[in-house]
Length: 122
Image 1: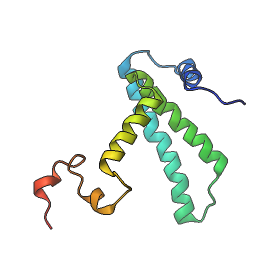
Image 2: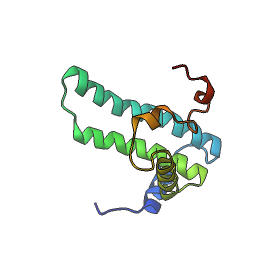
Image 3: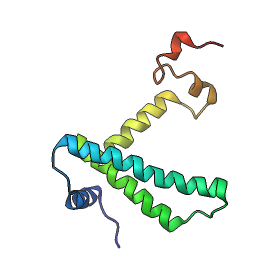
């Protein structure tokens, strides 16, 4: 199969989406679907780390595709493109970690954890 565009993928999502077309229904299905499919990915990792299983890459690819389907349904419902999400995430990460990830910055993130600003006990 040839590479598909984001627009093609969204068309496929809407073709296979069977719920009502309203925002609330799309968001509910997407959130529940993300939780379930992410759980499938987590289960593969758990089995690999703690049960001695090899990671089934074909199944992992399949589950990640399901995660992407629900993720893109949320994006579509909210009017976001994948590029919008990626750009916003990169901007957030560059602000948070201007040079590279640092544990100290991660622990002391007032923007992400405003409740920590004055209440952290050392």
